[in-house]
Length: 357
Image 1 (tube, helix red, strand yellow):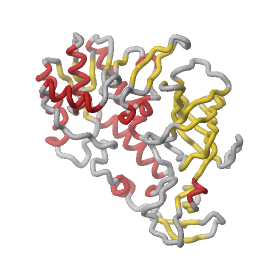
Image 2 (cartoon, one colour):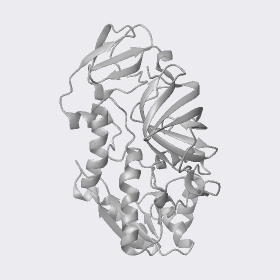
Image 3 (spheres, helix red, strand yellow):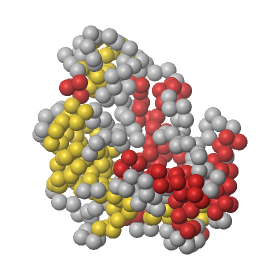
Image 4 (spheres, helix red, strand yellow):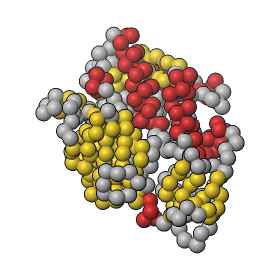
């Protein structure tokens, strides 16, 4: 068994659970980024994870993925913002980097399974004969959204030991077992932007970004923006323009270098188009399906109809208008607690019809 071991509480408890259940465990630490950090800081995670592995009496391996992570995640993150989109780097990292590296190591060492400290549950659906990811017991820590891109091959070999436990129970287990990271704080959402200030990160990466016009819904110029990468659909704060009432980012047009502002109701969408579909529950889906859809990680699931258009495209129509449907984000579909699949949002539309606006 190869388990991702970041040195955090969740991955450490996941490894400890597997040891307690009798698995022969290899803890694998992935070194993902290091730009702007000294070698001591870069490998602090490795040292912490090694300490946990030693405490648990398991083998420890670390894998340097900095170059690959830069190409697949950081470069993608920057390019998406440059295009006026809002990416979710965790989805891409899980799909293309983390689990691929763990699975490759498992094959190298002859392990039959991989595991991680994500909060979710892998379930085999008897009706469809396929594996899917379901919401965990602790709905506040639900990470199923960022796991929609995993393959059937991987899911058939994946264990998520924390799916049946709450975060409080995980913390209590860490303390009970005396794990050296029991009191370690939660990690930030975007690991390569530790300050949380992604705009400063983008400025450093992109250099000079041309300003452009803020437009109202009539297409009239009402101000000047600081550069398309620094805004996202639905944004209200930090616009730097006063128009007498609350204004939100309604549209970002990188071709014209223009950003359209409008009132809150203008940010509502009845549907969306998405590409890059990955289906978990179905091999050959029906023409349409009633689902609950999430348009971002922290969004509430919303009742919707998803139409499968072929070649990885889907159209989603919501029962009720949704706020700030954002190109670049993932839209993820559930039936009950379990994932149907997900895709990347390309465009929203305002009316309840199949024609993008």
